[in-house]
Length: 288
Image 1 (tube, rainbow, N blue to C red):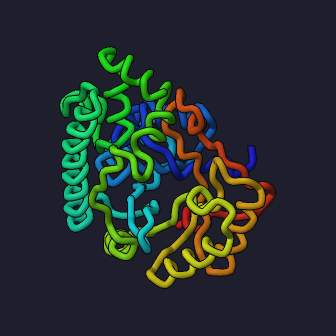
Image 2 (cartoon, rainbow, N blue to C red):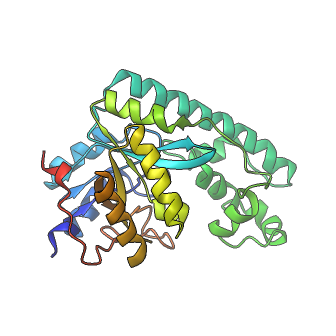
């Protein structure tokens, strides 16, 4: 196996919007032949100690990780954090505030979907959320309730992708904002906790807009950004080559990840599911 494919630094568990608990996730990573992983649940570090313990049992190396939702120039981006101290008080306190904001949004969404004619209660939603509550848990709670079946047909919703497009897209009723960190604050929080900040899946956000990707990476580099997720499940060869070039040009760390969520996810269902397209990188920050 190519050594680089022993690494997967982007995945999710039940602590946010994944389906597996950390122990099962680690066991499956080991079975897939991975040696170094990072569990990057959204806006939380609650998973870190649990995944570390599981990794010890399975003889797998784990890098402390998280994925922070941030705002930058009016757009939501995701910032992967690595190698931070999960006990850092300032980081934990700020994440607790974000968790409270997610619950507040969940309460508002109960009213939104009730007004649309669906049955949805907060406890139903939270029952699907092992840790950080998000929009996938809303979709699960609505779609798993048989009372809502006919209403979902009325809206033409057959799966979670349909649900997001119908209710969470911009200008839709379920597009309820929640509190997010600024990119600068998130980078500072990670640095002060001894960690690094890496821009997640920029090709997912900006598609083939090379000029915009370059501008954003340059501006975030000025705010202290340490790296960029060059290798990602959905990246094309061209997108990967562009990001690889930008990382080298700007002196940014390169990372790779599958963004695994669930074995049953339509897309993000495999560990190590990223391609290097023959590009060389040594993931040097993992060697320290």
